[in-house]
Image (cartoon, rainbow, N blue to C red):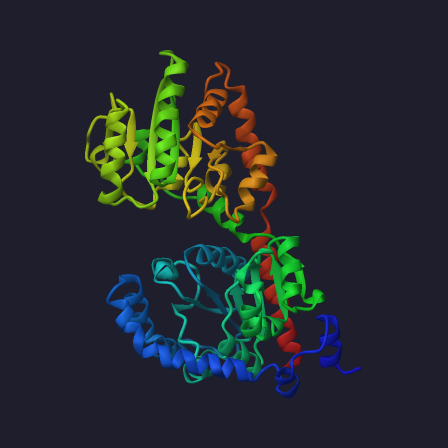
Length: 468
């Protein structure tokens, strides 16, 4: 039996006629149609940018991406060294890419790495992921992709999480690059498993020569997309390594935030909150503090997911209505005395790790909002018990953290108050210490994903060398 026939048999049946007629490194008819549609849509995108600044930034920055990548390659690309092209859609995936790239560098310092991203949200992180060159992903059109591949000459292309692009996939395979997907996530209910997406993207995923899945369920889902089972392995989640390094690595303490440290206070740090979270959080805090009595000072530090004036003003009105004295973080950093302040309202981003480090207990927002729960990993890695609302979306971390004894789901303000009393109301603090230890142990048990995903990429580089 030929190798392609064996592959079709392992993937559960015959491939469509167009795939039997065209090798995996060539664009299929459906992919040509996709590319034509994208080419037709592209001139209209600047119009969409007039209504959305983020879209406008992405369109403008992507305009020169190929030229910038080509210029870097002309000056810096060493053909004697293998290059891995790592692509991450947005911020979360870029942080994962950072951990995996660091593990790649540690194991093979001679590598060159190109990093691309899709969303403007990842632009501020791109320079810090550890790549030799970082830029926007070029448009997924044959002419642009061909130029980028000719300049970079990647030995391997590593997609982070789930996103893969048909034209880049086909043309990189034709050039001989090994295609991998690392830290791969694909929920059983993902839209990518529905017929329209499977029709368009199925060939793209079937070109993958290796998939490093976060968990067993994800691995099974990739098999449903037609990726042969022997190409898929569970490598874990590099996000845990990235968070652990970020919160425990050597970094200078922020002297302004250190002013908030108070060993004599019970401090609830609420991160990434929305209005629906705050509607439960504020009364629960008031009641739990009142029930605890006057023996210990209670303090709330609340960091909204969107700390703009549109959000901060209603939050401050809610706090005032509850009788809570509050001050913005900017005012405290400017010298305002924290004495007599019940609530610190965080009016800037980028400080959650420092704030969670001050917490007795953490509340992670999003669980009462349509956006779904934000990440519970950061406070858990710091050894802080975590509370969260019921809308968890695809957050398996929250489910696992609760099962480990380091986190609790709360359905309303009353349950939130009860958990605060349980964790903070005991004089000896035994419940909180047990939960804190369980939270950190859970994160520690999930470390190693960055190394495992890096090893998967290095295996593909070795295969590319053998083939060459």
